[in-house]
Image 1 (tube, helix red, strand yellow):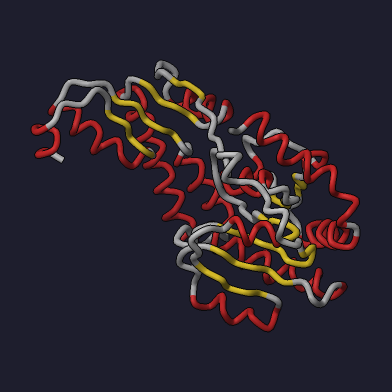
Image 2: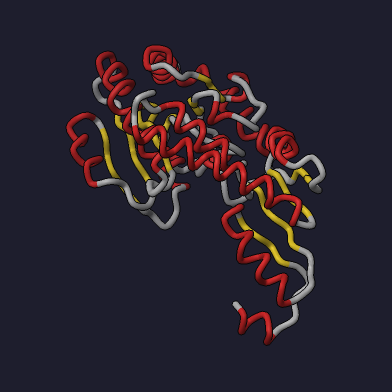
Length: 284
């Protein structure tokens, strides 16, 4: 980094995620230019929410909660050092201002390319194929999938035995493969997820810990997929069932919603179209 900064002259420094601010501040010490921080999440909130999900007497909970406090202290000091902080939602902007009221916070919403994320009408949809496309190095994604497979999928398969869940994305844990006989297909990394989302019937986003906006929900909506997610996963996306976004955070309600959508798929055509239109209107 030192060699690059000495060799070339730059106009600005962009820090992608809070973890890159140390490098950005070092770069600024070599060239006196502005720093902009892309605040994808207010990081301490994610880890405090994770701590809150762990058993009260768990040593892991104590450790994670301590890390959340340290992150909060770091973010409080970090934001004022940036010439601009670009939060991903108004909600996150307000949370960041609670830490640092004098920081220059600007909302810059995320977006998807509507030409790249659109359903392929030549591929037949299978209402009985559920899909999740994410990365599995993040523990919260892994635990969300496990919650769904262990608590929701059996309830759905009890009424619709041939329902399948396709798991797409990098680094799925090896133990995911033990669910093959329980209706789970671990596909893993693919060059393009769009063909798989064009053939699937419903997207799931079982994420109980997070901040910012789940881009994968926007991508699924742009692909005209109904999405079922807990309230945390839907933060920053002001859509409803009318736009194909269904909220549920308990197994029974989630299973009933899935069963109803699968059995009455044609009835959800308008909401699926509205899901894509919502993305076109707000997140391109």
